[in-house]
Structures are given as C-alpha cells and as structure tokens.
Length: 145
Image 1 (cartoon, rainbow, N blue to C red):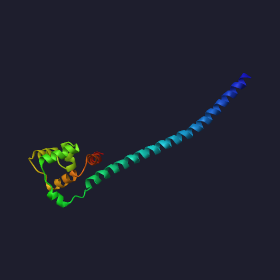
Image 2: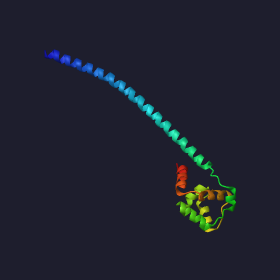
Image 3: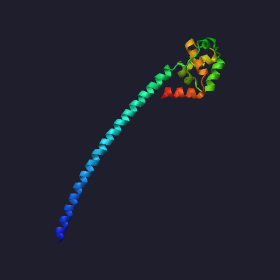
Image 4: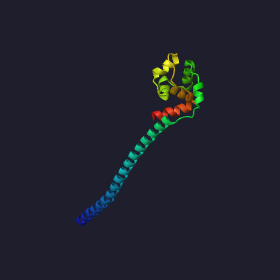
C-alpha cells in the first residue's frame, strides 16, 4: 500500500508542476510583453521631452517682447544703471550675457563704462528693464532645460 501511495503522490506532484508551469509561462510572456511596452513608452517619453525642450528653447529665442522702437532710441544707457539692473534681477554677468547674447567680459566692459551696447543689445536691455526676477528665472530655466 505504501507503494501505491507514493506512486499516487508522485503523480499528483508531477501534474501540479505541469499545471503550474503552464500558468507561469503565460505570466512570464505577459510580463515580458509589459516590460517591452513600458520600455517603448519610456523611449517615446524621452524623445517627446527632448522635442519639447528644443521647442521651448527656440520659442524663447524667437519670442519677441513688443518694444516700442521709440523706447529704444530714447533709452539711455549708463554703466551704473545697467549694473543696478543686473543686481536687481539677481543675475551674474555670465547669466545676463546669455540673455543678451554677449559674453561676460562684454557685460563687465559695459558696467565699467569702457564700452557701450549696440542697438540690438539695447533693444534686449530695454526688454529686460520691463521684466522681474520670476520672468528672467523662467527664461533662464527654458534656456538651461
């Protein structure tokens, strides 16, 4: 009798393993499919984020704040006034140089009175005068992003 019991037990164990194997294979296939779908979604998200970043950069570069041409011709430039503007906005010479499209050395030359900005930079300086810290921070984040 012990022999029949052990044979029966082995057969039940074999059938249980077979059943479990078929169930786990289906789960493994589904899991692999889900992983590949998740990876594809991650790749697509990354590419969309890159596209968004590029679009934000080009939009911020191409964004033109409407400045009255008379304002730029009437705008006065003083070295101390420009330095005060930079300090009010909480920017380094390098950061404001990035915003204005010039080097940090150029900014220092303007602040010391050695040189003066060209007309195209004066337009940008006039635009900066109308902005606050939050606006400038948002632009800097778009340029960095």
